[in-house]
Length: 187
Image 1 (tube, rainbow, N blue to C red):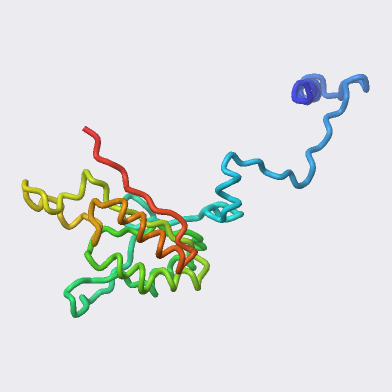
Image 2 (cartoon, rainbow, N blue to C red; image 1 turned 45 degrees about the vertical axis):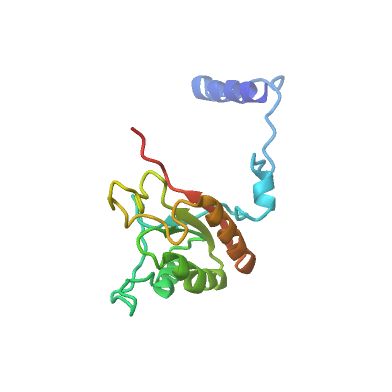
């Protein structure tokens, strides 16, 4: 009813160039601060979603930002995440959440555990862990190593082990808030 009255008032001003008679009740102004009601109140109360919402970046994919790898391989032969530079970039972008991909290298899990998670925690950045889906993880299959490099290691397709280990890590670094399995190929 209030919206109808407001619409009629606006119509009268536009068409007639005047206000409607005083018999039409005025529409009260909305309070300056209206508490937002979210369907995910439980999630927000648990601290998974920050009070101001999520400003995020994701490794790779079709996003505005990507992972940062060190320019030179380490002694193990792999280019690791450059966690310090990545955290600096995320802070410069005012990001409060980063979707950390356990994706490219078998060292990604250790990079998260030993380097990125503590730096992100100190910077106030939450972490969601992103795992390779079964449709893209071809490791140890008889058909051969097609896309084998894109398999989350060390637990590969053992998502129960992933859940257990990510949960354990989140006890040490409470900024690790969630994990996900990336999108599946659909045919």
